[in-house]
Length: 131
Image 1 (cartoon, rainbow, N blue to C red):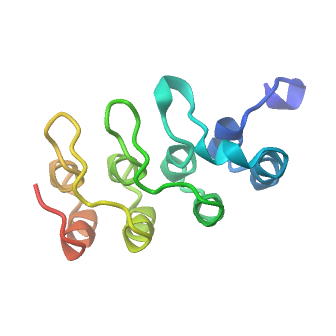
Image 2 (image 1 turned 180 degrees about the vertical axis):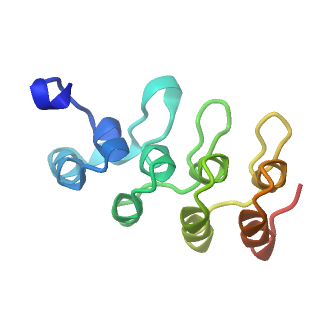
């Protein structure tokens, strides 16, 4: 769709890994660092679930909050665990993500254990994560 002229937004650009577009959006309007996508999902969520580390890093250094949550409570760390993104989960924790957000009573560690993802569980525990 995009190659046929459909319009994009910063959340879509971040999801698709289009670094240049993300950078351009922020150069035009730095307030977009607090942008929300569909259902109020924070900007940082989109590159996290698609493992676009360079965009996550860029957005963080531009001021994106690693603890910004959707109305349902899903944070970028929670999303990283849901999508089995161990490297990004670790990165987020190193950069201040709270290891204890709860969504429907479940923490990221609970989700990692349910998915039998021992590496993620170990990472979360090393940062104080609990069920």
